[in-house]
Amino acid sequence: MMLRTCRVLCSQARPSAGGWKPLSFDGGAFHLKGTGELTRALLVLRLCAWPPLVTHGLALQAWSQRLLGSRLSGALLRASVYGQFVAGETAEEVRGCVQQLQTLGLRPLLAVPTEEEPDSAVRTGEAWYEGNLSAMLRCVDLSRSLMETPIPTGNILMQLKVTALASTRLCKELSSWVRRPDAPWELSPERLAEAMDSGRDLQVSCLSAEQNRHLRASLSRLHQVVQHARARHVRLLVDAEYTSLNRALSLLVDALAMRWNSSREGGPWVWNTYQAYLKDTHERLKHDAEAADRAGLAFGVKLVRGAYLDQEREVARVRGTEDPTQSDYEATSWSYSRCLELMLTRVSHSGTRSRLMVASHNEESIRQATKRQSLSPSPSQCLARLPPRACSWRSCRTLLDGSAFPGSKGPAGQAGYAVYKSIPYGSLEEVIPYLIRRAQENRSVLQGARREQELLSQELRRRLLGWGVRAPH
Image 1 (cartoon, rainbow, N blue to C red):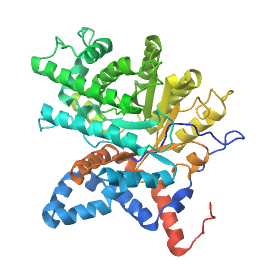
Image 2 (cartoon, rainbow, N blue to C red):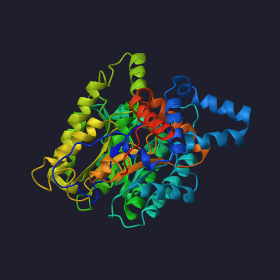
Image 3 (cartoon, rainbow, N blue to C red):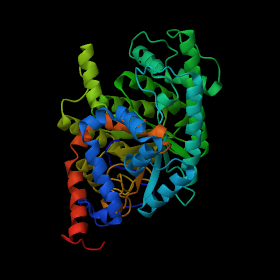
Image 4 (cartoon, helix red, strand yellow):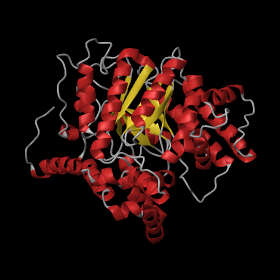
């Protein structure tokens, strides 16, 4: 699972008066967590930073089940990885987890841990995608029910994985055609949106009959999820995936935006994700924002650094193609900063027509955004003082759950911002493979998380040995 902390919907919270004050990320909010929780967090962080465990995680899980039995193996997972990252299996367990988060001033950002891996040898049929559709619809309802307590309407968020509803094979095929100058006219957001809205048969000339059937079914599933989410006042944040799929994913998101992101509908209901570690992200972000303006659409963005660095570089090496990723971490950070500045400027001028989630574990990115907001000349022209609900920050329920960046109790929350937690939920069988894939995608981040280990160790030493007793907050 990725180690990430981000800002989420500015909602109606306001930063403290008196101008910008630098945020302190010193782990001061650890006092809100129990010693057992901190010990588990440190243990899981170190396990996830151990390459053999991450690389062979699925095989080791199968081996432990054979050796220890399903019950004991499951109990160990629930006490460690599952307990650290997952909200629970049932609606009641999720609700209990969310209530704990709310005591810290946090809001939930639920994720259904279902996706289809690229080049998977397992062929999935329409029944599998239809089952995922039912799970997504239930997640919409659960997301809404968790926030029945007073919260600004439209501030309820949920993550959506397109490859749970459409095959990676279809997405690869679409991506290969979208980039070509002779792409069929049917592969336009307008045409796909029309097909979704009307329910009429869509025939794309470059696809086989089977692919066309699957495309129509996939469009119907996506349309049903967004339609239901809109009726329940839940905004959908579509995850980015591999570059071999992303052009198709963007095409589908653009089609959904044509139908659901009218500027008269209260801001965007479908957001796309932009990965700053790709070389072309800034230009694509600028192009897409301008296209939304021309079409009179609201524009929602989740800005991430990216999670597939090692895989993308290996694919480029094997194929002998240009590496699509930035040269190093510093270049990625520069790209992220440029994209962040672009979106902050847009949000400050267009209000709730543009919305942004700053999805980053990087402290400097958080400081850049908060400082940029406070320097705005007008209360309606800065991230923190934007028209209500214009910007977002997110924190994953991961290794730093409720620690360095918890809601109203941590630096971000004390500065007047709301924070959301990204939390998958489901059974062990569903969630553990999902978590292992996230750890594999983020192995470089997890291996470099020395500061987090240091903060956790420091707090545990303070408690166990009585060193440097922390002043009460």
